[in-house]
Amino acid sequence: MGIVAWVVLGLLSGIIARAVVPGGDSIGMLATALVGVAGALIGGFVAELFGSEGLGTFFELRTWIVAVVGAAGLLALVRAFSDGHDHRNPLTH
Image (cartoon, rainbow, N blue to C red; front, side):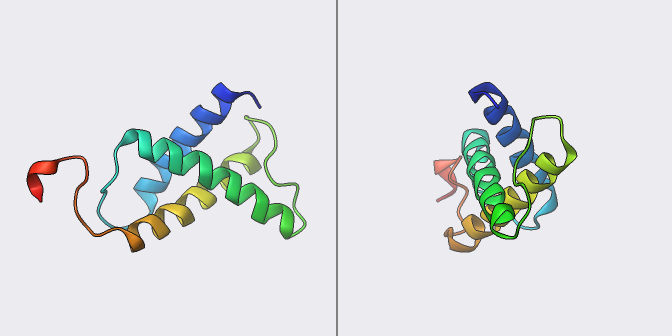
């Protein structure tokens, strides 16, 4: 996959993960895209550790499932270690 496909995959899997993982959203869209891309990479690595092929091409269902699961796991970790403040709006501190 090219860099544009990774960014699109990351953004969309990050958005889906934000919708699936319960809790407050303390990160913006750029951070969501970064969490999505990193989560997709982590999900692909973990899938390969368990004997799967990991990430495939952009239009494979397996790629999207692995990316969303990885992004959801990373987002859950980010939320667990965040201080609970909304970092997008500095006036709420």
